Length: 406
Image (tube, rainbow, N blue to C red):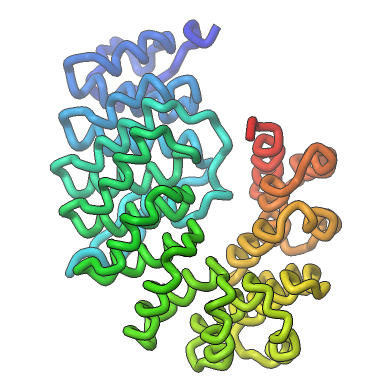
């Protein structure tokens, strides 16, 4: 019985009464301590459950996301993230959202790992609801951690009340929350946020505008094509321009083809990449010759791999070339392309999970977890015995993802 498990903890965990160097507590007693009026006891209970790595603790810990004390809230959010991520996540320096530089939180760094790093566990509705409520917390760090943790943990489709609360956060007084909300909406493909995102591309803060444009591309809202084209013309260059063009490229409307062709030779590689993707998604067969020339002569790795993706979308056999181009700096980009190309890519990927490049093996295995099916499980189970921990972890995660309800 899970409730009868014993958890060891060291005297260093303050707040719990101990008479020796270590003591044994039952799992259900630690769960009860999450409701203890003493904040030291609550905090110790969170840390014990985090370190014990018992997924059964995910739901009972959820209310502490809204604890009156900031430290307990932040510790709880970090602990909940730990149940969905195998690797340790360290905060990193970030610039933007605010004038000064500051360290981002753990949830921001976890979000930046991408959705493939997340273990496919069931997500209690109570946890997602609590995180969305914490977006209105008085503490700016709690707010930011809560919105990005939502992006890591939540799964589509959201419940109607959760979706409404997330969309409402696009109008939050904190610009960091508004920008984070747009990114989370894009990750969750929340199509009903389209109108609010279109409004947000005129936000007073550039980071919010850029995130809103990218989210419109992620949800592929064709109604936004005209507004995004206007934004591209307004910016002309820089992050604003490529955010608009990237969104147009994801939508892939035929009306955008002349713009994509015009920018195929732009001096900015981000613009060239977006134009290339757009031609592929729009099905512009007339651009195949130009794309095939760029496949070998463009000096940007991100553009070359985008060209392989576009040509594969246009019916050329470039899937193997796409994988060949998945060097470290564009590996995540290649994963996104393979997932978008869908289950047909599995037969090309399967022989490549024996690649000598360990990071590439793990990346391809993670892709199979999304586009694979029961026929890929035996090979993934074999990969789960790989001596490299990262490869083995990716394979276990992939099998769990395939076997999880979809």
